[in-house]
Structure formats: C-alpha cells, structure tokens
Image (tube, rainbow, N blue to C red; front, side):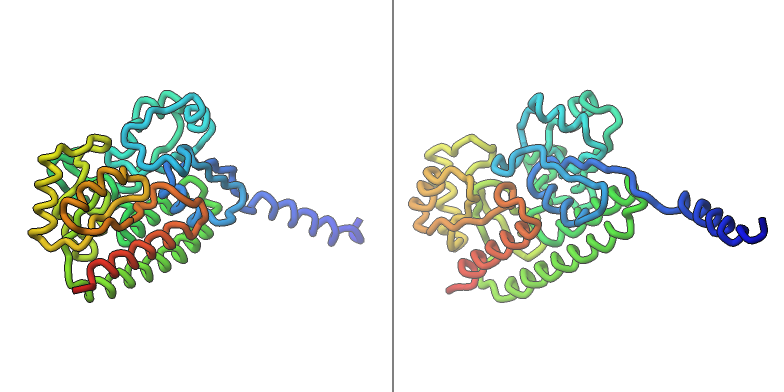
Length: 295
C-alpha cells in the first residue's frame, strides 16, 4: 500500500487543483450599431468563450428612429450584454429590449462622457454623438471594459490589457488631432447634421451652422439663404457632409455660399474591421487640416 502512496497523493493534488482553475463562462455580447461594435471587438480581442454580434447592419447609420425587427428581438433574446451608445441615440432602449430579454444587461457607454449640450437636441438637450471624437471614444471604451470585466471576471485581465492597447492607440490619434488643430487658421465649421459637436469641443472648433437641424427634414429656400450667409460671414471654408448625407441639398447650400463640399465620416457606417474607427478618423483629420489650415 505504501508503494502506491506517491501516485495517490499526486492524483489528490491534481483533483484539488482542477476546480480552482478559473474557466470563463460563455458571454454573448450584442452591439447596437457600428461604432459600438468596433469599440467592443477591440476590447474583447480573442477572449475565449466571448462572442460579439452587431445588431444593426453596418450600412444603416445612426439608429435615431429605428424600430426593432423580429430578427433584432431574437438577437437581443440570445444576448447577455447589450452595448449601446445611449443619450437617446437608440430610442428603442427600455421596454422593447426588456420585453425581448428581461435578464439582459444594457450598457449605455456615452454616460461616461461629459455631455455636449445643444438647444433643440433630444434627450434633455444633450448631443448623443459622443463617439465622434477620439477623446470621448476612450471613455466609452473604458466603460465597455468595465462592463465586460464585471460580466466575465475570468477574462477581466485580458479585457483590461486589450482596452489599454486600444486606448493607447486612440490617445495617439487624439494627440494627432491636437497637434493639427494648433495649425488651423480657421475654426468655424458648418456641417450637414449635428454629429460633430464632441469633435468640435475636444479640438477647439466651432459648429456655426447645420444644414438639417432635424434629420430627414430638408431646409427651406429661406433657411438655405440664411445658412449661406453665415458661411460667407464667418469665412467658413467648406460645407462638411457625411458619406450618407443628401448631396443634392448639400450642393445647393454650398453653391449658394460659394464653398466646396467636403466629406467627414462620423463612423456610423462602413467597415467592420477592428481598425476602421481609427482609419476613418484619420481621414477626417486630413480633410479638416486641408480645409482649415489654408489661407
């Protein structure tokens, strides 16, 4: 019997060790729309047992007045965590989501960002487009990391490491904006929608006009003349539109004001590659620098 004791002891030690191993439970994450998906996949990385799905198609854009479909309800029903922007961007948050999945945890990431308040903006006068600024994006990424770490403690070190790496890249991007902004000769901009309020605040720009103050509602002829007058008076060098803006209306305003149309991408549509946000925001910086640094 004594001859077998070392083997038996080893077996007992192994048996005691196995239950102590930290094994991650499966975690199913659903992101509301493209920027939330991009932030989340960068935090998740290759964490075992964690899946990230995108609810809205990457071609759809901001879900201001989006109505959930039966397919969306099925995705919500099978998810553990719902990553949203919040601040009224996803108007379906609340009862519709809870009805589909009473146990789902909803994370409104923009709650971590100091708000930009604008007259006429929804959700208590707060601009909801927080992600369209690298500085704000870092805060949203950190909010995602905290929520994921709480939901999957076994993966928390991996989530923190991934979030640190991504936040460092976003901080480098933010530094590029700050450096370029110091050379801007002009700071007044006119945009198609109110999506660049956080970018303007964080890097010293001023949004002095918008083509569509209500999404989908075209300006009247009088409003176009008034906006063109603001562009001329302020010396705004270009009219900045999104990739999905109504170009016919934008060109009418630009022609009346005598300025070119330039594209700024709010990263609400496009590629689902993990680097897509950084790439789009660097293209935006190049566009801003070309337009605002000239005479």
